[in-house]
Length: 395
Image (cartoon, rainbow, N blue to C red; front, side):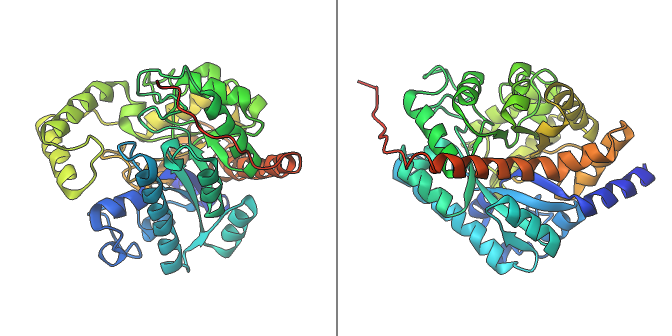
């Protein structure tokens, strides 16, 4: 395996990882209220975070979509304000660590960062509630550097159904379809992680541009609602989109699903949200795990998902979205952002070609952003900004 690891690192030196989703900004908010002096990622932050610059370098990461996530418990102006604060946090990180990070808003920026030896830092908004039902706010987020928006998070919003909520719109509402069209027009990627299968299919019907799944794996391998059904994966070649496999154990390992339900119930019993990643939340999770050993996912499990996704969608339509610092638990061998070479080595062991690896790690993600930009340029030449206004259908 040593030879395969060396080969993996050599491949990543040339075509590094583009990771579709990392929640470091929210972790910094939760843990230190954005006081970067207390979480200086120039040094070792293993005690607190999955992510720091030395481990990004060790992992061969060349571009990172930082999630500017806010929970769906925030709504309206409160959600929009928190999203702005998340964007500000990414900008603070890029300014403070400018020798290692470069803000990127285009495929060309990503390639420029690679040539400079810096990590391209892009942003993705996680949850359509972030725009407060305003297309003007959507356009504003794009102007501030947000290059994808996940249409929902864990709960439905006013115009789209989530994978983990009871159906309300049967996919996208009419306004939701207009959100997708306006994202196409401005060149923002439509992210279908977290959404229901009906929302996935509606978005693929409406969109004129390639879509992404920033952090979702294969439902045929692990039957969790956060994963992608095969009939949707089969549509990606015609659409041009990219599905980026996640590492979250409860989404990739069937045995982890029941365990996670019990762990989430334990968090609620302690008065905490299931996704609480503060020091208190982590301590509660660790204590539960000690008393109830969890099923452990491995690098091989992630590779099983990628094998299946490649078979169904094709090598040009898959990528990686680890969800580091957005989950309490990670697979063995992929404990933090330094672990990507272990995954690449496993894929090489399974006879993935060098060309396959380069597509998975870099080329597909850069291509899909560039394609969204091209579609946006074309559409904006044909029509102006949408003036659609959300109107509630609730009596």
